[in-house]
Length: 308
Image (cartoon, rainbow, N blue to C red; front, side, top):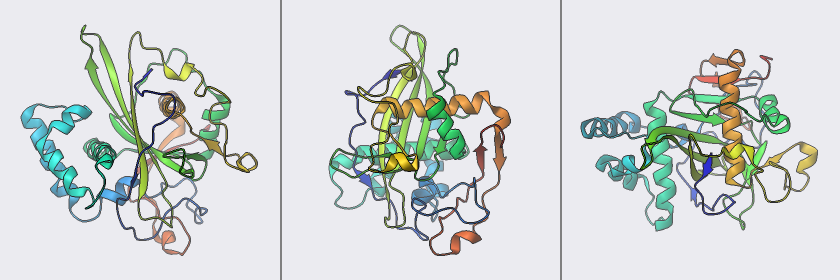
């Protein structure tokens, strides 16, 4: 896997204050009784499922893409569509700085493809997430693949931490949007384009969340990023929060670490099918209690360790 960033670390991104929410966030509260392993409210739901946005906007983009024979999973082609450009401008808050456009464009692109491919949500149990870090599977012989061309990987709450900039305090990472598409280089050699969006900062005291977009290419002759160290110094995912070692927390400081975690999670999903089970949307009555994390309205795939 070849990194497409100009630099080792994940570049700073502006927070996306996307919505005003009802019910708060999940980050700093334990799950309610009976909700162990349940999907939490996703950033897609926070930003795009209220009102008629799904039924009014996304079908129009899909119709234009089909009429133009464009693949909207290709980011540059999605941005070319007139309906997507108009819709992106509509969701940017008044007075937002111009540099926020890229983050909103990335979020909108992933949200549309997430909708287009059936809103596929994968929830990693804590034991699986810890295995992917501590076990450090090498993935020899595995070719990068995803069960769907667009999905959301939801991490355990408060386990991974990252920051949108060196001068911004770390926030809990909720998960990753991942969208893949096929392409070819100038010599006609095929490759897979992987677009990812890390979502962080979802909690009760905030109305929105932050995003960091990044991408890579996978294919023959492209060295896989997960075979190299993710940091110039220190261990991959090594905690940098004061006291975080005692709590067993992990930090994501570089693009390589983020891509490594995504690849390991998708490898696990593909090679441990017996540990991936489908589940209906969680029962939401428990989320009505003050202090409890809101639960998702989406059906999801639960990813467990050894089926346990």
